[in-house]
Length: 67
Image (cartoon, rainbow, N blue to C red; front, side, top):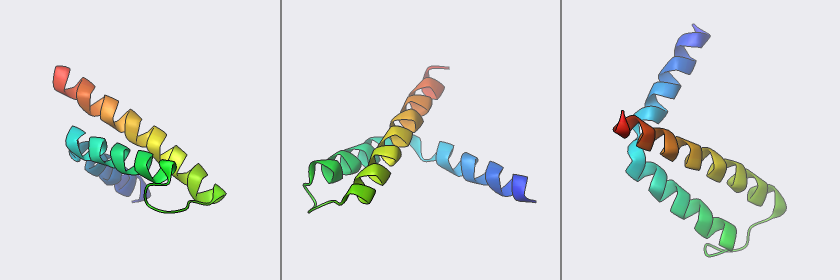
């Protein structure tokens, strides 16, 4: 059963689309710049990881549109 949940989560992420990931990247970049208030070390690290993932997801969305 656990594998089914993982597949569903990955499918949901893939369905979000490039526009979602572009918005997510903008938000995370603003957060890292401090545009939304102070950010502590732990939040900064978490945001950086999330930003890397969002960029990967955007690239995957764009690749999918080319195929």
